[in-house]
Length: 531
Image 1 (cartoon, one colour):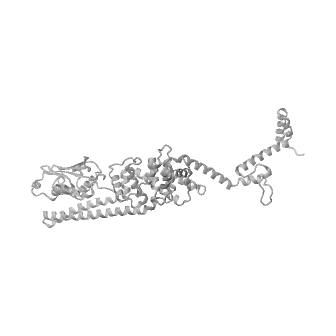
Image 2 (tube, one colour; image 1 turned 90 degrees about the vertical axis):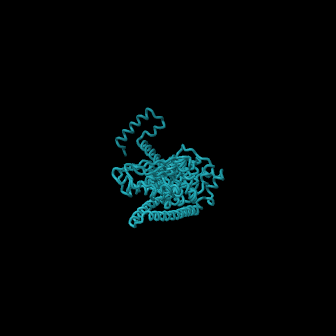
């Protein structure tokens, strides 16, 4: 006869003792060790069967409908069903499902809705999660103001053929989800969104004005509020950067000047993500709109029309608009180049005639004429910076002119604000005047002897006149100028300051030869923001 192991007999005896004292009559059938072991086996089988049902939802509860082997048509044993349920493939699918649920929960919690944009995790879970990280870094966690980011996203999404992005992000602005992942953001009305989408693409004339206003900022300013003219200027410049980055040098420079290097880089990161989102939707054109926006567009046909009607969508006219803008810019640049060339030739001709009339000796003529041509060349170098959207500043012009003569900075005091921008149309004549003052100081004045000193002070005066005035005061001290005391025959430099600046630049000037040196004051209009 089979006998249970000692530990089992002791356990059974203990159990029989307890059951004799406390168990109801129905439990008396299990007093034998065989009965107790059978109970344990049934409990384990039940637990395993429940596990199989969890891992294999299709497993039936009752033995009468157990799954069968396809070959033998006999019910599968529990251990076979369990072995099938615990295959590595099924465990991987279960893990992927849990990861998908966590990912979708994170997206929904941050954006207030689960966009179908992130609904491809089953096909490429790792890639989609990396796309989510890009979304967070360049868009959601980008420190630019919430509404600025979301409004710019909607504005630029007009240029995407697939309409998913503009529909989804218009929904964020309207409170269908969180704008730029910010649950506390103020939402827009339908009318505000329609007005945003209907903003015209900037043409050449409008772009020129927008860039000029951005360039007029003397120091970086905060990101503008929604719907302001400053925001429109930024949107115009960012549109060019987004659509034609290779031809947007002036727009990039204008945005940098207006908002600073830091904000410009954050805007560039946002533009890069918007471009990524557009490409993603264009390569996944089967993306469907979310239910919330489908219902809203069904209620507001005017909103649906601007968001979905591709016949009126801006992207269809982007090529024409850009060609018009770029052609207009080229025409403006070509006209400006022709104008500058004519002015340059006129200036050279005047310089030649005035130099020849004052210097009849060939060697003297050649030296003076070459010196003035070099001054014009430096001006052209400054003007070439305009290709990058910069403007020539007075302090930059003055320092470059003094550096060209290799003067000692110990004899010079320069006092004035940096970054005072000069008009391009007046730059040549004004630069020649500064050149003549510097040459005279090097030859005869404060920079000709070590005991003399030159002081140049300047400031900007804002008056009721639309154009502010730059006041420059040139003062030489410690010099005696007996050879220049005869004012009956003024030199070219003095004529240029007292007559050409006044006539050509509408400047106010005063030139005086004092016993201590030259004293000259010049007030000239400078660049201002066009209205």
